[in-house]
Image (cartoon, rainbow over all chains, first blue to last red):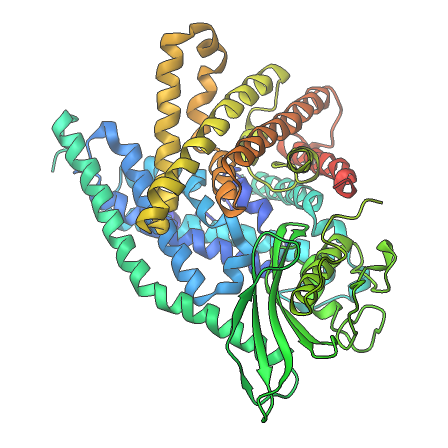
Length: 196
Length: 204
Length: 190
């Protein structure tokens, strides 16, 4: 397969969030601000990239019947590494992402890519797929975070765009997460239909 | 290379091997990141102590003390002047009644029970709402919401909704109320009060 | 009194799906019919309580004494995965009727982040064993409440004329947003 296509498919056409609707918990839970969304997205990208690479490397020495538990161990290892490194060097981001960092482990995208792609492809394809899917996920989270931050408090990445009193608080709170996501999915559906 | 057969021995070896390598590499990363994690925590704490206290010569020995009401002890850092007299205390206090539970603060309280400053050390409040507590209650241009410079008595500080005179954060009264709880807990501990307002949730 | 606060806050105020965003995947995935929503709720309740008890014991009697708290994520997810398998096997033998009702939902539960989420939260909030179990049950009820209400709404939604662009998933998610708004009304009560 063309590696460039392999890399870019995660952004719009097979975007894990807007099109495949996977890994919704962090999508809703960590996108109160653009920076939190980006941080969560990059953490997941690292895990996806590393676990895809390792799973593809070890696919031949793992017997079929214990494949899923082995993959889960690999994923959980990288999640814990992210957790510790973040706590050491980015403590404030670590605090605001909270429980969603260990929960990367149950993000269906990560196990899904390991099982559906990495266990059947070469190391190079698998790592590019992991990177592409991860960045597509990060892109989606940042976009949603920026939209919610702008609508909710008039800022993007903490830069003031509109005066704060124009913010609609509801978009920072839980209901706004669902509503903003619903509209973004509707827009992506429309874009994909036009292309097809 | 062909895939390994799913015999019992192969499965056992594979699973055991994966888990062993995983735990070993985690142990390694844990040891590498352990000291930066501790250093980051300590640095944060020292910065907060320096920020909340007035002019002082040196810090006395820190100690732990149990508040009149609460689940855990608080850390107290006495600040001394040139003559070794205590001028103020920095208190690391906490509350469990934030909107998302636990909040940890560092607050400076001088010998006249006046708040000399405070910093939020740990919280998980809603971004854009409760997370504004540090700026909101530290705004010298808005005396209604500013709490630095206020003198605490036995009554403690209360938000206006509970009959006090502190303006709570718009749409995040729960966070402000929790912050008052942490402040009052700090004050009650350093000034040896038997109890303090705000220890029990206010019903209205 | 403390238990009542834990229960009310977990079910209504900090609803696990609508406010904490845990377990959103099954919330969107199995909410097309009320029947399946009820089955899923049963399975989640069962596994959530069991998982909370087992992970609590592991944290306090294995990880803490050995000072290997950093293996928490790995240990918990493996425990939950094997627990789900075990429940499936036992249920099949002991109660075929119950297995018929819950069986299809069990494999889906391993990747339900509400289970792992609640297990970790119980440790983080420093609950006792009893508080932890109460918290797990309350959260399972909260999950079920949100899921069943949402399934009811979606059944009605199928009969409505929805603007073309919003058909299907988008309108469902927006509906969930409005449901979350309704739950916000409870936020004053604890």
